[in-house]
Image (cartoon, rainbow, N blue to C red; front, side, top):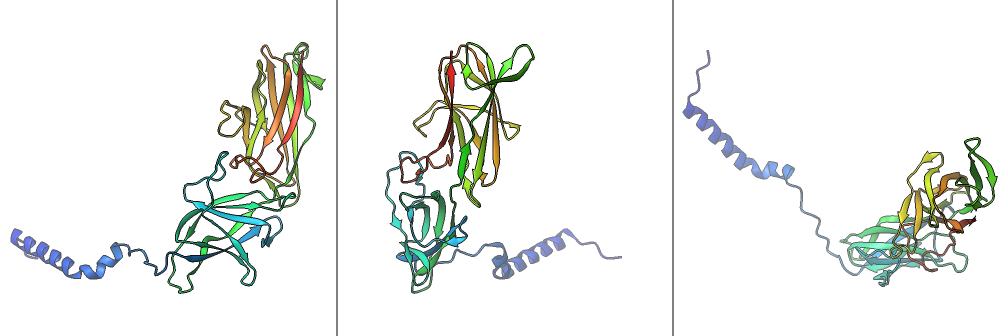
Length: 303
């Protein structure tokens, strides 16, 4: 039978374990404490390299675009943005990449289409990082090193189908070409949006409807699924007001359908317009960024 350890024996054991831990600390501490960040020799006056890829054209872009770098925290897509870029990229033909002089750090990169008047590509915006280097040439690759640009697809809103509610049949089965608030009280309006051009896209945005007093959208569907209708009452941020629903990217070859149910509760006359406000993240107006024309479809509201 093993002898029973006394309290004094246990104290000696604990002291021995603690001493061993202290002695071996330099060996096992490296596994517990993360290494210090790499201290680069060069962090200023760097030449930063990157490439730009045309998703639809499946090729690298070498001209007719402008890469602009802004301070971290800036949002050049804001509607009233007025700050200047801290640096602008240029294409280097022989090494076949874009380059820009920057210090190590984080930046906001915006690349825009400059091919006037036949712009085709959406502006792209993303946060990028420049690391330091120990290379005496002070050349570094941007992170990420390849930036994608999307080409805008052609989007067409077909003439909407209007069906007035039939009190006799209890169905929306009366074909109409306008919203006549004297003859009927409720309507179902159906829109079809077709998207064409291979590998191109309509970037996510909002469908807006003009607010006409007393004309209420009661229910709405996008591609067969019920979606919420919101009320935008503030124009300062995006220049728009009205009822709206959001939509995700629409890709070439897709056909999308919107169905809304509208009710007259003392409506006024006017024009009930649908606007496909694509790429809602890009609010900066004018030809610099929002160079395209948003598609619209109008219905007359008459008495």
